Image (cartoon, rainbow, N blue to C red):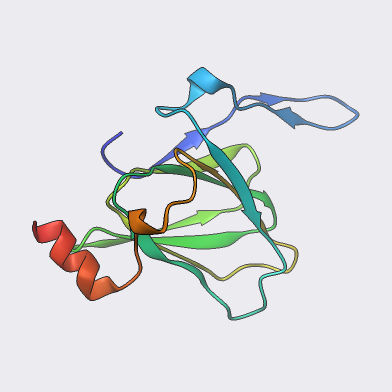
Length: 132
């Protein structure tokens, strides 16, 4: 897992509703933390950081949002709007989440527990990190 990429999760369709599953061996990392973002106000943005070591999978459980990925050279925008699709983000990539729709929910599966020292929260520091 060297670059961010979309993955399609299994979707079990049923007349009573659909079900998607994420199993331990379906990701290129073991997840240690699960959290979700919701009630994001119109015009607000989340993220705005990179991780030195941690990787993550982001999924739009409800609604939609954009994930802007920067690598210090280029920018790519992924729109997430399906609960059976996710975006794998390896460590070392800057991410910004915005354009949340009303009711948008972002589920995150992270490869590690919260450690403040793993975060790079200043973009200029991120660029220095990428050059090192």
